[in-house]
Amino acid sequence: MPNLGIRGLYYITHIDNLPSILRYGILSHQLVEERNISYTPIYDTEIVTDRKSILAPDSKSLWSFANLYFQARNPMLYRVIYEKSYKNIAVVEVKPDLLDRPDIFITTGNARASDSEILSQKVGVKRLRQIRKDVDVVWWKPEDGSKRKIMAECLVPDLVPSNFIQAVYVATHEVAEEAKKLLPSDIPIIPEPNTFFQPLWKKRLTPNLFL
Image (cartoon, rainbow, N blue to C red; front, side, top):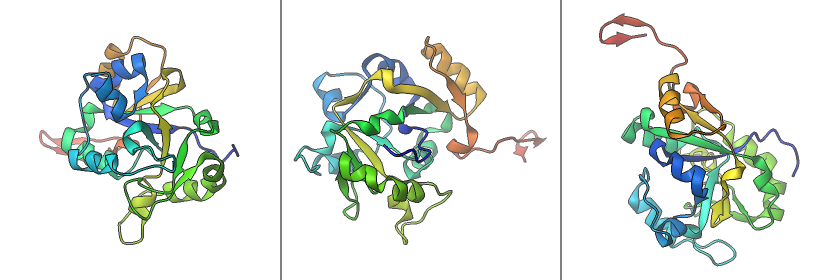
């Protein structure tokens, strides 16, 4: 894989799911159901149902893939933070070595969108330079396609083994301390407010007003 400065691939989840992910890996929706694994959902049921009917080039449903994003700071994270609170959300960072696997697929945007291509690993890695450019943006809008493109995915058959996990990101130091109680491991838990659309600092002006 060409070195394009891709630091990692990202999975957005509820903080309560971290122990299960460290134990079993990041599972496809299909495997979660087959193994009857308990988890806390963060997704929109309608969106996930739509993905079940979409097929990858190998004729398998998107439900049979674990999906990772090239950019964690994306519209899905923005939405779940609004719906669930940043205190409940974590971003799991996976080693980019996963992109060397020949059985993965790479998408040019949200895999659910009809305008997105689902590419084989061999073809997809040749498009990574453009994908990197498309996801390396601060904000997005649907009109120019940037909202779809920033959601580019790496689709991994069945599961991402837990040994590929290299870090967990959360919004604040307080959330990091809570996450450490759930994860008795040496995986770094890193507060990164900007990723979670939070200010890097804030100052109390009054009991109810912050700057």
